[in-house]
Length: 283
Image (cartoon, rainbow, N blue to C red; front, side, top):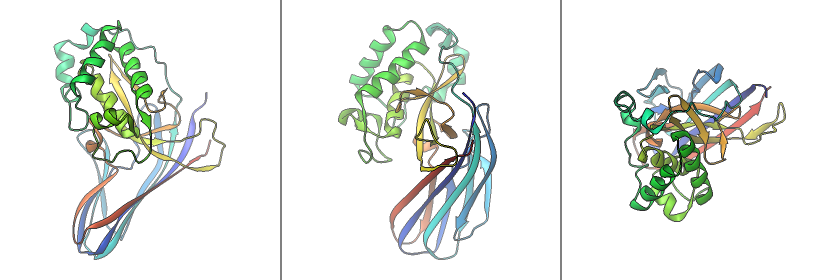
């Protein structure tokens, strides 16, 4: 399978109940340059106009930061990028054993990616389930794939079932959630059995057989990566390895490390947030 070239337009912002005097914001909407994807061009535009500056945060995500000091009743951020992506690699793993990933150097290196967070903490029921999955599989890689299969089989994808503050236990209890919840639950289970795991934020083209030049409603998406001597990326929501339809924006412990847009402001309450993602396959 050949590489894809995708053009992504991501528009997000806030409406307010009245004039806001100032706001301070961070956007994480700029795709990463890395081994399986190349950013050919990218830009982030802000309205009302504001001077922006970019930096990489602690987790390596490109952040576009900006302040708006003119009075405004709405804030809009539009990120446009063209990215070349590669098909999925193999899912064979590197043969690492449970003992291999538990050596002190590995535990020190990935310490932060082994700890539970607010959105990835498990309850006793889930801890017991994942312990059984570990016991049934000879290698960490096989157990990780089994965790993904388990979560996908138990939690139904349903838009609107949860919010950005929802956690893994909430999604598990109601057996419903979106990609964010499914990824939080998967990451929490992987960490529970001693496997470094991280939450990945990005975009997904929804059509595996997308026509060249067709613009479709895309998705801000989330998936997971686990470390077994190397990082392996998998999309538990769709049950597929990460490939040419996925575009990475950021990684972290959970959603709180990689929100597409966040900020603080002085003024009346926000009346809502609008998000639009359009993806076009160029090649």
